[in-house]
Length: 106
Length: 106
Length: 106
Length: 106
Image 1 (cartoon, each protein chain N blue to C red):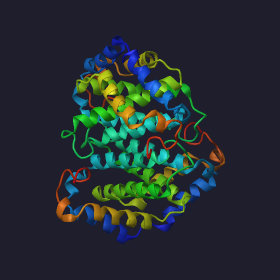
Image 2 (image 1 turned 135 degrees about the vertical axis):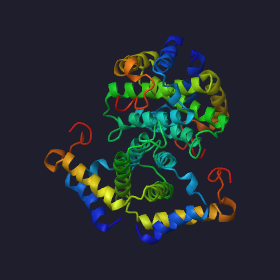
Image 3 (image 1 turned 90 degrees about the horizontal axis):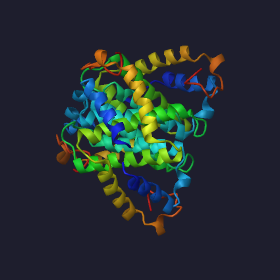
Image 4 (image 1 turned 120 degrees about the vertical axis):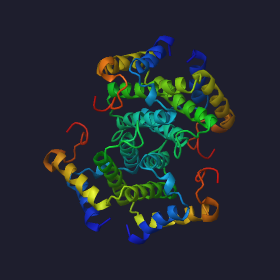
């Protein structure tokens, strides 16, 4: 994501003095709440979804993730690369390839 | 996020032939599931959390968001800016400033 | 559910002095967390699920619902009947019958 | 819960021919979605919540749990007692008493 977009997200909260509500715990709740508004787009059908609603709800999840990164002074690339290194070690290509039981009982 | 990090996320699934499992509906479920592993870090206390666990779980949420953007051919900056424009119109600074009832009944 | 089962749930927390952790907010988080462990049973497939895992996770959701009813001195029959009355008024049989857009845009 | 209340929940779906939408996977999504509407009551504050909204949202969670029990032909007392037996063995009173690290690293 571009620096301008991230700045816009941070400034939105600053301008409204909402940083006081953005504790890590409240942001974790908010990410889950928005993730479930996204899930609601697929509540009764996997295929018949409203793409505009999906875009709005996915954006909301991302916005709160950016707020949480900012709040905890975390770098997205750093935490994602650290986690991807764990995932790559956990699921070796030769074992995981095309395997439906991938994440659970490999 | 850097292009390299995004490529690493996409290649991780491609190398394992997991794209077949990554329907938009399954990714929406996955974002919610990971969001709740993040929430679990704050289940019994708002302040006493394991930062390393928070980093791992927040990274997992972000990874599935990147997978969903890729699956639906969406641009993060584009959908986030479109949503921020709506949020800015919905919560004018003068009305929303420091207001605890911010999102709900402004 | 039988009175004995409800008593067993309540006594489990009392015996461990866990009531102090069972604030309404923490129980709401716990219900969401357990609901997502249930959802995880269906993460990659709608049909190919582990019934024993589903039973355990659904039980966990119900246990925390009972804890929350107890904490807030609510009666399950009372709140469910009050909500069903609203649902019945909101979704008249003649309009809602067999309608896939049922809950959202009826 | 009384047999009458359960019957009312089941008949509500039958009368609207909604059983076709109530696959176990869709019900799992629905429980998570409603659990997060309940969580939303506590999004920005643990203490300052709307009790009427909490009652409605908790009722919605319970209603979908009843739908899932019915769909899978499960008995609430049976699955809850089986899970409570596991919990009681997992968290012995003498070790778990008043322990904040209760569920995670006992």
